[in-house]
Image 1 (cartoon, helix red, strand yellow):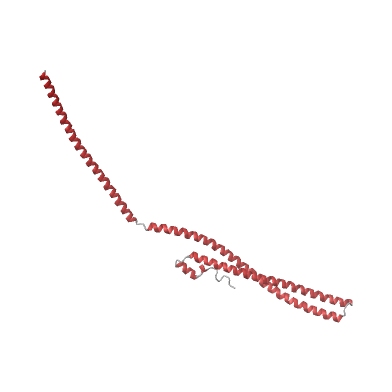
Image 2: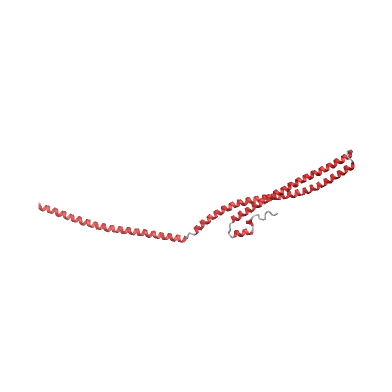
Length: 235
């Protein structure tokens, strides 16, 4: 009985081919663990059945062995009775012989039961080892599955981020930034140009106003001098 015939599907060539084709290894691992648990259940059932047969064989051996000893004891008692005269010698010999025949039959049954017991106990030992191995493998693969799931989660997140970063056109981004810098420089130069124009317009206006203020002051001075001359003439 090969209880490891489906030990782990991911270890089979078909599973390896599936992984190579980028099929989901987590699902394959989970299926493999489910198969191993089924094998474990089957092994536990077989172990219980073989243990029961070993117990039965051990009990049979003890029973037949005790019966053989009992028949031997009865044969001895029959012979002793004949020796003490409590029983006819011929009858004692006849019954003692039959007791010894029964003893031999039970010894044969005891020998057969002992051989079956030894065989079943060996099978029990092997099945117990298989069960331990299955349990260890299940525990091992369940722990590795947890690690695999965590790694896949991190890998998917990293892949998604890298994909998003890869989709960004660095050259177009740089070009866009250069255009923005040129636009800002143009706007700054235009603003400075308007400022200079505004300053130039303001200077012309100031000059005009200053010139007008000078003319007005000169006219006022002349008018004042004329007024003073008129007052002197009147006096």
